[in-house]
Length: 254
Image 1 (cartoon, rainbow, N blue to C red):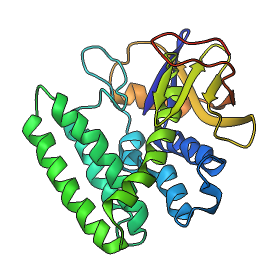
Image 2 (image 1 turned 90 degrees about the vertical axis):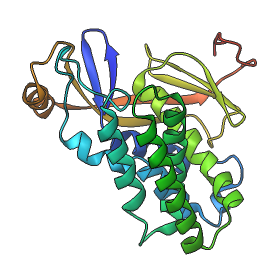
Image 3 (image 1 turned 180 degrees about the horizontal axis):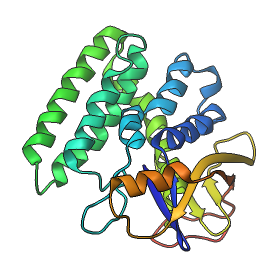
């Protein structure tokens, strides 16, 4: 799950809905001739499914025992997080090998950073990196693709993932990646990008549930609250970031 704080509430997004938003962004991408990309179908599929391994975790939400705070995709215990990447990189390997390759590159990107930063379970994370590297090599052969081509395509998955994470987490700090700059205004739910990669300003609706920002007594308490919560739509306007300067820690007003 992705959990943002808005006033007295937690906003709860599933990883599936976060990834769907990434896929919707990519489907409207006009930068870099994506409309005529020979692997466009697999790129869009991988964007929508890059976090598919989290389905099972999101279906059984849990919270930290002492604090009663819901686990999100960052705080979920390491063993369960590793399981998500094993599932997610394997699920489409037979039917969509190139899309599975892009998803595996995403898994490697995440787990390699985690292995480098881990203070505990470093050996387990390193073992997972080795597993995913072997899966990547198998999928390269199955898809008949070279690594440089796949990594070039993966940059679009990486970029739209970051954009969607920024919105769903309500991160207000500006970001820059792969030559694109952006920032999200959580007060008005507006995302500004430069250079603007879409055909024009547009609005997206992301499914979300709102639950009280409180200490939960256990998994059953949290799961019951989420199950009873009404589905809403977070309406996000995406527009050009006019007058943007190089990001040096402070955002320029749009």
